[in-house]
Image (cartoon, rainbow, N blue to C red; front, side, top):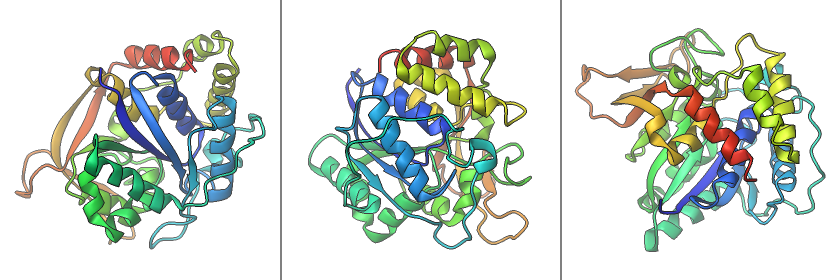
Length: 308
């Protein structure tokens, strides 16, 4: 498999941590050129601190880390501290980082990553939090999109109920205008929404399999998953589905359709509007994933974490 250039924009978050470790463990196949943070699960300072700690835990502080936007484009900030803990990672301690964040803002760093693809191999932008940073980069300089082959994101729910409101998934509801901009970018989008991520259920056996690896990374991730399991009725891993698709797309099934985001209705703000039947006459702009081989997914996750 050809090594793929990727950039991870995230809001750690336990499942962002799993996505990061998965990417790091697949370094033979994925070239993680940088990480950026955005306010989401918790505020910009704790998510950036968490990202630094996760890179330190993995011994990969060589990867540039860039802090990004502290709030959504046009709506009031929300968070998921009730699910992820006030620190975002369930109170699991991380090592003190030794490398400070880069001074370049995340929006500029994403732009630079994309532009490197204008003269070399195109990159893939992976978004696992609210899409504020990516949307601002697109609005400011849409020509940089020519350096990308696609955007893979976790967000939305096409054919079911939301998880922060009856209509909306957390990342879309957190910054609906940003999600709308990303989906309107003209790039192919791979959508890992609740339709598929709800199938990636965390079970005691899957936590044990990670813990049994015995590394600092695996034990910390298992502890985060345990803390998460105690906070929600059915714990699932949303964000690492993005990385799993890049590594093993045959784990997933989905449908191509046009996807839009409701940015007008107070009742349905952030609702994903998917058109799998072509009723609007608009061309497909996303592949909405709907099916997952959960066992294969967790086997892949465990294998990657074991390589960090």
